Length: 140
Ligand SMILES: [Zn+2]
Image (cartoon, rainbow, N blue to C red; front, side, top):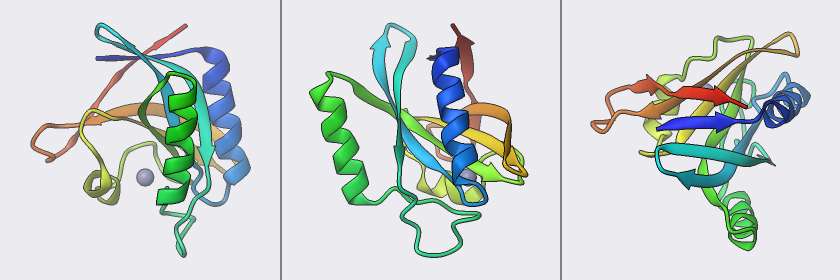
């Protein structure tokens, strides 16, 4: 699968995650699947519901998840994955991210250094859950 990310949406994601700095920001990628392409059409920011350590952890709680699921349904979109930031850390998923990950979802991770977004990468969980593989991003 390839993740198709319009540059306007990429900017939107980066802006949201910069605003969350120095905490981790997060949200859900909504869109459509066409053949081997996951096309992102909306990036819905979510509240980081983690009770502590929000500078290095995030949690999308059940209420936020339900709110965004309903939004997706009402617009005939699917949840394609999750994006979140790593404040002052590389855009590489952590072991914590891997343990919490679901198969098939795309996981966009953005490094935000001193409040400025840097590298953006996308990952998918290997079917045996042992690792994340880099997912190709097609920018349009
Ligand atoms: Zn992470």
